[in-house]
Image (tube, rainbow, N blue to C red; front, side, top):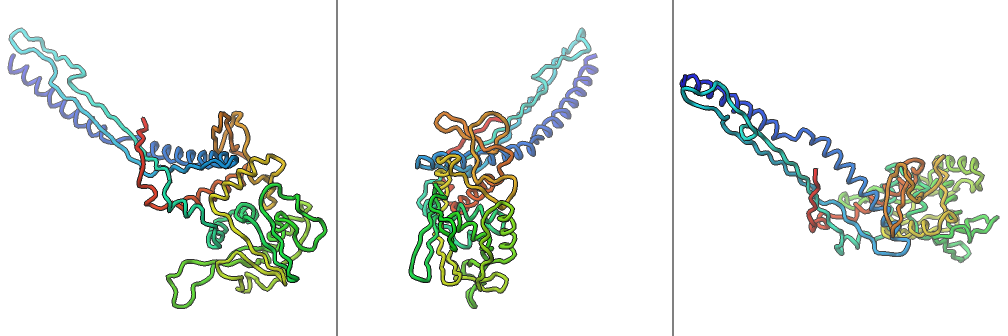
Amino acid sequence: MILGAFARAARVVCFVLAACSLVAACAAVDSSLSSRLLSYNGELNQFRNDEILLNILRSREFEPLTFAPASEIGGQLSSTTNLGLPSFAVGHDAASQFAFSNATLGTTTAVNTSTKAAPLVTSQFYDRLLSPITPSNFLGLLQQGYSRELLFWILPESVRVRHSDGRDELFMNQPPFNTACELGRREPSCFEEFVHLAMQWGLTAVPIAPARGKKDAAPSAALCFDELLGSYARRAAQRSGHRDWGSSGSNVRCETGRAAEANKLAISRGGTRYEITPRSPMAIYRFLGSVLEGGPGVAILIDERGGHPGLLTVVRAEGGGCFAKANYRGVEYCVPESGTINTKQVFAVLSQLTAQSTSRHDLQIGSAIILAP
């Protein structure tokens, strides 16, 4: 009897050990890892959009802006397995049964995710954030398919027009936009008309090959006129009732391989020279804040993409889906999920320009934040 009891106990122990090994192997793998990573990706994306909106809202009052991207993501998986012999009795009168409990076989698994948020406060980061946009930046954004008209609105700070008779004019790109426009002039009289003219002349940018013997030189770009882009914009202007400025009539044509000066946002047509003063990424935030502060009266309409004309659409949150949300001074603001393709393009441009201003060394300092699963 005693030997039989021990034999049965041995078989049970073997079963327990086999079961524990299987459970431990399963516990060592987090079966929800893929969903966790995808969820984390979505949360980071939402945080970035919300941060951009909050900084635009801050820019309305010229408040300091804060950039605090997640610099590091870490994960920890711990598994604990409990193993013990079942309770059984040994002896002449022992019952042929065994008692199991949670002390006999058990396993626990804990998963923690941590992220380090590093506020960008280095002088190098702000040097780049305050540096003007270059022709290469403009070309890179164009090559990604962003609206030309949208870029013409957010990137330039002003345009200086130098006429052949010695007169100079300065078109400022700031609200209110159309108060300085003079109807009937042969040349643009305000920044809004310059944008329409640039669209209809097909103003764009092309890469410039490095000089012979300078293969390691930084990439450069120059402005030129593309007749096909211009004809498309003129047809769009006719449909929307805007003035037709005609073709560029310039020899600075992209099709002929002739462009303006490399790495300069300037171009000439006839005896008139247009010199564009670009904004910095920080100044783009200030500009968008001023547009938001001006309300519907300074709304910028984008004709290049039909159906969604507004440059920047931000409303009071009233339920529904939001592409970005932010609480500013106790008020919930929202960029609606639908009908805001231009606003989403603006956010994408700001995201890329901020990323280009950030180096690895800017992300070294951070505070660890533990996120519960």
